[in-house]
Length: 154
Image (cartoon, rainbow, N blue to C red; front, side, top):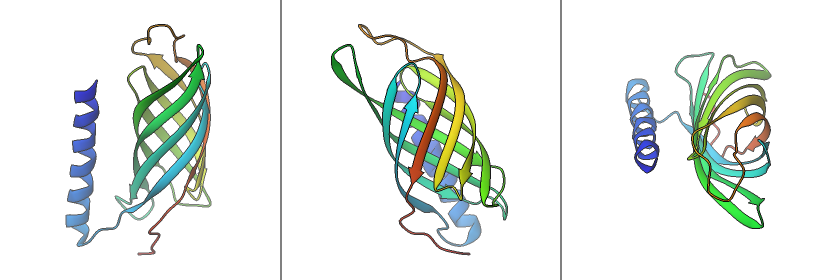
């Protein structure tokens, strides 16, 4: 799983680098994110993200972070990466998203309020179960707040 996460990280960096080279500069907006997710248990999600516009109406966001939960009398922390494709840039940004962690892969659909507050629903498919804990798969709902640290208008 570590190799998969490393490969995804390299792809994210490559896409961003190539995008910046094509547009003649760094058009990434980035920052931290905090969120809550229910997926067969409650999770706090902390991550960093980067967002860029491949065209004038759509955005792609990459994020990487950690999920925190209390389960089976122990605190559980595990990494997660995700990619979000925002389909338009109106007040409400509809999106599709995929997240992967060592235990599930979770496709989602949702809507973002200016991509600052995201609401999503989806389904987590089990990859493996951590010994001593219940599976993290099933129907999911989430809300996240994305704080842009370098917002700019192009």
